Length: 107
Image 1: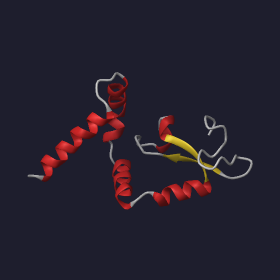
Image 2: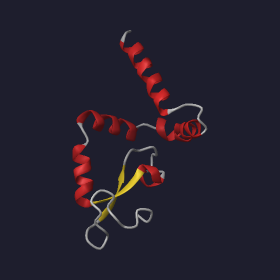
Image 3: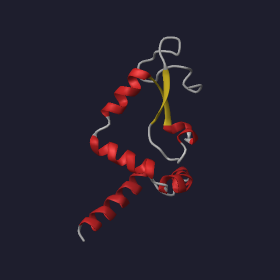
């Protein structure tokens, strides 16, 4: 909230006008308050509620699985390092995972 200067990043209302909350774009930690700042955004109560309702059923299942998984927690730093050092791009990771999933489905 400090980084976002007490302003909803969706509608622009401030802490003086509305109640603000921290919205998790995704979960990469087993402790919700131990997320990297890039995974958090300040939203007002109304925008936060709307954001959560817009999450489709498939995305909600993925989000729920990730919240319960320790994989992201254990590998987040390695993944961030590889992307920052240009060892791999997010697109290459997605392509690799797509190929693995297709191979798995073909079994």
